[in-house]
Amino acid sequence: MRTATPSTARAINDRLALDLLLEQGPLTAPQLKTLTGLSRPTVSDLIERLQAGGLVEAHGMTGGDRRGPNAKLYRIVAGRAHVAGVGVRRDAIHAVVTDLAGTTVGTRTREAGGDLAEQVAAAVTEAAAGRAVDAVAVGVPGVVDPRTGDMLEASMLPGWRPGLLGDLRARLAAPVVLENEVNLAALAEHREGAAAGRDDFVMLWLDEGIGAAVVLGGRPRQGASGGAGEIGFLDSSAGSICDLLTRQEVSRLDLGELARRVVLAAFPGVAVLDPGLVVLAGDTGREGGAELASRVADGLAAVAPVPTEVRVTEVEGDPVVKGAVVTALTTARDAIFGAP
Image 1 (cartoon, rainbow, N blue to C red):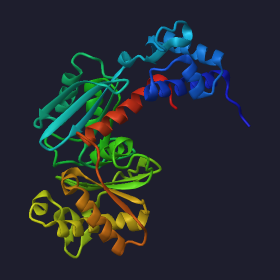
Image 2 (cartoon, helix red, strand yellow; image 1 turned 120 degrees about the vertical axis):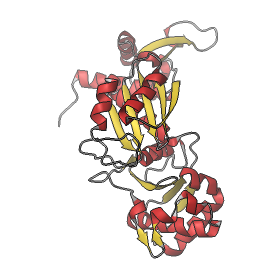
Image 3 (cartoon, one colour; image 1 turned 180 degrees about the horizontal axis):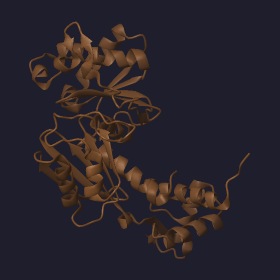
């Protein structure tokens, strides 16, 4: 059996404390001691070490008029790094820049058009407003190859050309991650939406495009080639799922027929994966609301071999950009704090 070296143990303890400060901070040294289970001297040492490294700073006092080291509050130095989350749509590019604590410090929306890499880099640069960006995550409506991290053919995107990932990294001089937009939206749903606390679920993206995200063990699954969740290619006796659930088609359907078509889209994932939960997202899912979710749940119960709950998305704002920010923050925090 191998035991951790002192330096490894320190790194583990530091990351544990930093994560707690992000989730629950500001915190006092006694609070960190209670939450981590570490000894008082160990907590004192790690606070001193993290302060010296520019990761943690004192932030006021607790306990009213109390004084002394046990009354000091400590927090993450949020301005130590900044990240960008980007959502690329066919008509617009949305960029949000946050500090290391996830607080938004800048936003920018640009109309799509021209070279895609140039437009994304410009949106990030403008949102950053002179700040250095330490990590960028970009959500795209297409398949991302998990082996290369680059986007496969995406002629439907204005200004796309091969080599998007490398071009973005060169333009932004920062780590850049490309990810399918539906997977990022599912990440946001898992973090703060209808799937919070559920590690297994399928999210149906019912919007301009039709797709799904498969989340197992709390992680979106890309598949061997990045094509997991491409349910738009599924066929039925009434036509392809993609054609059955376009926004134009949906606009002329009553709720019953819409629910029937959504059941056709959801059933394969339910039958094969038994996720226990299906989340209806995108504009169609949100507009259908609780009544659509209830009818889809009834439809699935009539045909599926396993019980499945159906919920409507609860993410406010742009879920793709929110998921991109989460991904960029993970990249930056792992680089600065050390991998958990």
